[in-house]
Amino acid sequence: MRKRTVFRLAAGTAAAGAATFAYASLVERNLFTLRRFDVPVLATDAEPLRVLHLSDLHMMPDQRRKQRWVAGLAGTDPDLVVVTGDNMANPGAVPGVMRALQPLLDVPGAFVFGSNDYRGPVFKNPLSYFDEDREYVQGVELPSEELRAVLTGAGWADLNNARTTLKAGGRLVELVGVDDPHVERDDYASVAGPASPAADLRVALTHTPEPRVLDEMARDGFDLLLAGHTHGGQVRVPFVGALVTNCDLPRSMARGLHHWPGSTSWLHVSAGLGTHPTAPIRFACRPEATLLTLIPR
Image 1: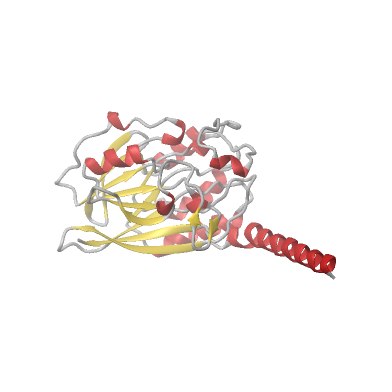
Image 2: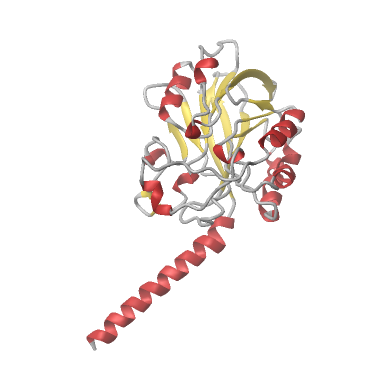
């Protein structure tokens, strides 16, 4: 009787594990969702301004469902579109990325790149993310310059270690960004300096939300800091949350809207819309885009 009970428990555990894996790999990773936050960063008499934040598409050429879903976000009528990197997961991904973004290119936009805009993904043991000293391994070269040319050709601002101003929703927006700190391509020092008080809004971009970079952006007075990279943890444990962030950001900030400590800045970390192709699962962490409605303080 005891052996039979043990066998049943083992079988039940195995079945539950298989069902959870099937849900995470076949269902949840395709449950794209639009999250919404109000962010109080505008002057007291200002009209709201809508910012659509996209990140971590990790696009494969045949992911037509994802491409259609992202393209449909044009219906949210954003005033500004911000993309915080890791757009590609395959050398042939640029057409798919552009199918997704094409309906949004008429809107003022800005972007930074992540490591997976330069080099493709390689297989990793998921447990390696718990090793802070692991070696970063690069995959095949990706057509980053082709993607950059298409986005800048549409009028979007390339903020990889750059700074600019643009008009969005009738407002003057100052923007600054860095290339991906995860692979040490960032050079904030080259674009640092106090944010302009003449701007109606000041926004800073980075793919990886490294605190050393965010601290500098907040210190310069940028109202809104936008990042991706973490995938929200990708696998979250109920009542615990993200197990890792793949950077020095606290796990409690792995996704969503947060006040950046010691400043008046707000940080939004997108859980992103894709997954690593060799680990195509999400659990308790649906793929997402975010519509940030900026409102008066």
